[in-house]
Amino acid sequence: MPSTFAEEIFNVWIHLSVKINDEYCDFKELPPALLAQQGPIGPARPKEQRKEITAGHRLLVLFKSD
Image: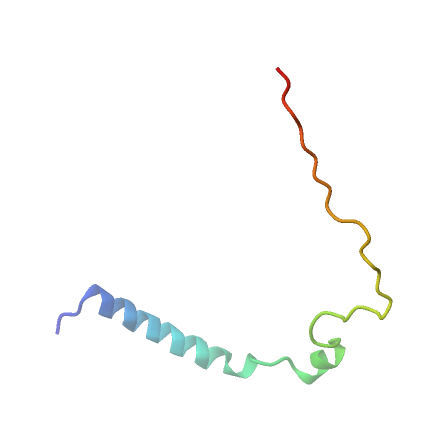
């Protein structure tokens, strides 16, 4: 049965998706030894010491003189 180019692309995509899923299904999480070495998840929260912003942006205007 002849197939279109889109069907061929879809079949290749499905084949690769299944292959990758089968090969890497055991590696979706780190082993416990590596998980123990990891720090907390996400960026660190800032300390309670907060600084107040006292100055804003400065606008520099240059005039062209003839």
